[in-house]
Image (cartoon, rainbow, N blue to C red; front, top):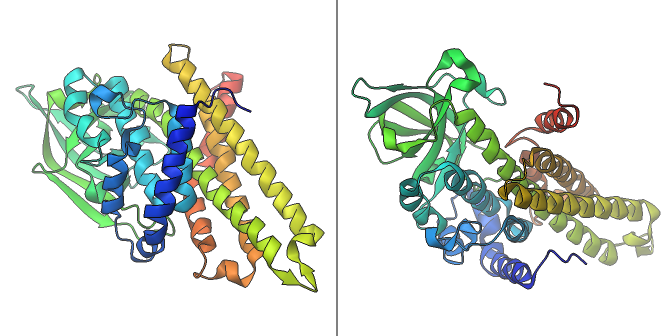
Length: 387
């Protein structure tokens, strides 16, 4: 049906599906309940190439494209969105940023161990009082008199994988008077003095994906660990988020697919008033609407993947396509999981079934890597050219 989906794409999709069903499914509920980080299965994901799908082979990755990444991530998230979140941050936010803006030395040192799953990467933009408005961040990086190190101070919040991350791409202010044009990016090694982790967030969903604050207290970051030039941090952050939004859209699609498949099966089995509930028109309407939204999300994701492919050839940005996919897929995930619980009735509300976990996991897709409101703003600005 889609000639851009090759046999190689199908192979990694099937490999991800098999791994998710055989390795993740048996432990997903346990990790959700306890909030325990799934380090063992994450390591296995790295060994299979899932933690660096788009990373070239010379840097320890699988050397495939965005579509392969999206297909694999969707399959992982159909079973557990927490594992998918860890995979997404590694691929989209960490490795992609370093591959696009890093030096050769930085790629060799900081991409290779992450792409292989040996170590874990993270991305830190948000602060307690600075979310969507990155130009108001309070953290600071000041170059020392010798010009050898930046001294970093401040607190960052909602950093996915931070409790276990070895390296973090950090965005902080070097010239606060310039607001977003004064943001600079750095590669942080988390085992150095001056770095510490704050409280781990008690989250509604994706509970096995550890999220915490990180704190800098006179942390010395060598100049060679600056990513890009001074003042390029905001541009780097937004460019990386374009890629990240395709990942979140794929995550949302996986959650929605799982909820839809469960609902179809239940509608064919559950009886009420002498017939299968799937024979009632109101249930049929729900299933039809769910299916339309899921397939529309998939097509928008494919469009974004192909747009990114063209952008990597030097043919412009893909911000609008990524935002459209992320917006529609995330709202679809919330819609479909809500309807799925309604179709299942009391069983959908019970922790005996994974539907309530799908519902809890779906909500964050409308929030992180740009809220739905921000996605609409990006799309509208792309259409009008107005700021």
